[in-house]
Length: 106
Image (cartoon, rainbow, N blue to C red; front, side, top):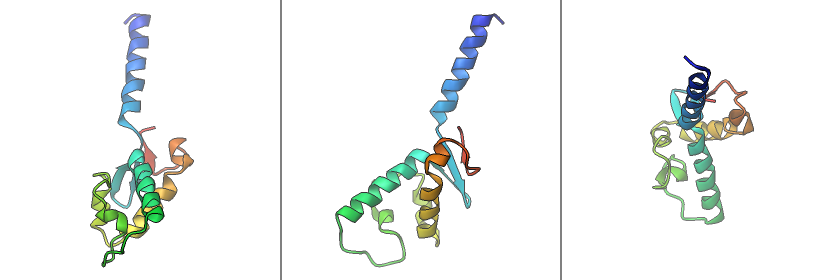
């Protein structure tokens, strides 16, 4: 393998790794870091635009059609609120820097 082929292979591997994105694994759920960022945005919008509370134990964001699909299974768990809280905590800069063991794909 020539030197240029080696460099092309390395660049390709780096691009593939970055295309996969960063995932957070928590209590059997695996979600993308970008999805947790979207969760934060949705919750901020809901706080700034209060709507009548729905009955039930589910967090209000579970009723939002814009909730990313990889977060929707969390809504089916009885610990949805605490799981979302934990995911938001994990998704801090620590995850983007990959110093949190729950983060993969860095």
